[in-house]
Image (cartoon, rainbow, N blue to C red; front, side, top):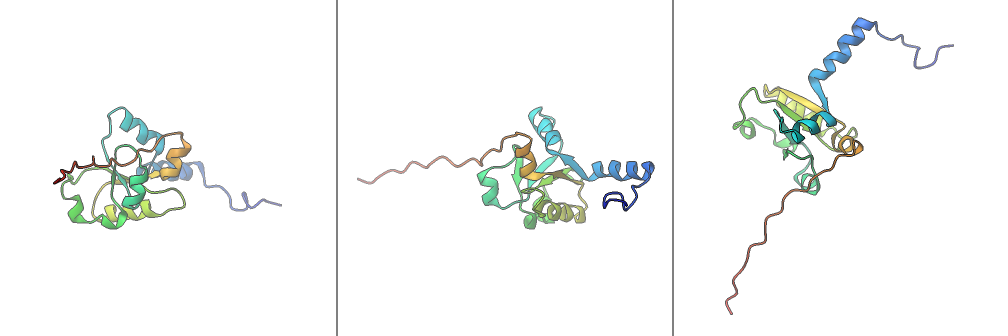
Length: 143
């Protein structure tokens, strides 16, 4: 009796190679993003598709806070049309990165998803950075 794993036969090797090879056109992983950022070879714009509040608490270094609902043509106007965007959200349980990727693709922009999101980043032992908080403004008392 076949297990539920083998009940549906595996794809042929050539179909499997095409499927898994194509995945790299759509996805990248946390370690590759980290290496690009850490070595100064970041040739993409990294969008954190979570809320601004979650971004402020901790985000991937080099990321820009861009909640998926804010991705519209006007927010992208300063980026050349061939700019590669990499998007992430909280992790596999969150579809914010997929929503961001879909919005970018519909706007005709090259896009990849950072698989794992923040969860994957932390699982790799990588650190998040908090958003910079503005320096307190000195006030002059009128005593």
